[in-house]
Length: 336
Image (tube, rainbow, N blue to C red; front, side, top):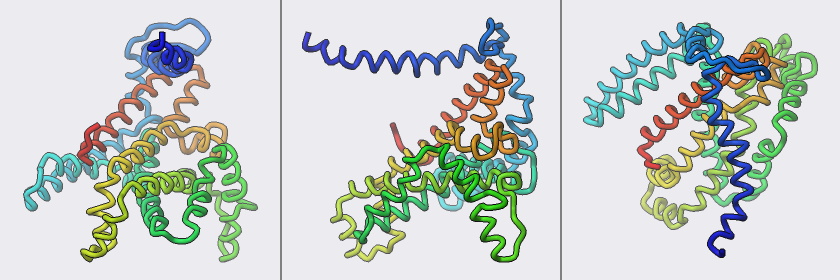
């Protein structure tokens, strides 16, 4: 009885988790093979939803991916060339070069006006969060780790946006920062003699990115501060004695010690972007028509009664995010 008792205490929480999390997530795969409006009977359609997804320009842009594929092949060639010149692993650098070119094509194509779909916008937000939020958070954490006054107070202030409702933050940024008449940004623009800008209409993706970065940098600062405390101070003292510069200390001591934490934050960036909904939906309007990402596009399809198609989108997004995480694990040479 004593051996069974702990499991009995866990059983209610486990049942709740299985019923309201595991089962719905598994059932998404089944519903993706049906045509269903969310209320009426289901009709089996096989792979029809996925076939529709292939030709859906609202979800993905074949023009942008064609450009990205060309850039990816160029990156593959450059990666292999670099590996040969430096006598390093050709496979690793070839793969890294390919994906660097692929992402560069997505970013570059978006900048020059190539039409983008919800998937490309999601990837842009997710990848920029890795290359913007994480480095900035790591630098701030390193500064605060240097035993300066008020480090804990600053960390608490930086973490506050994460504790506040995203809907509340979206409303604050929509009306107090981006509003065309009374928004803080347009007040600054007028001070310099410029014309007010309708930020959420003219630059919706940039507006969402700025807000997202402001919210989540504080979260990663706290995570990195906790990770840095796990490194013995004697190691940093030894680095100073050996004459290592700040960059050398970061590269040879800090990153190798917290590489799994960095990987965790990268995964959080990608998974968080694919799950993001409330902030973007509230900031850009009821349907976020100008800046759909996969989550808002999925909900829009559900609102129109295409639940099976929405589940097909969710399945595709699941495998894409899984592939991205696998690439990150490979790139950082981490086994989990």
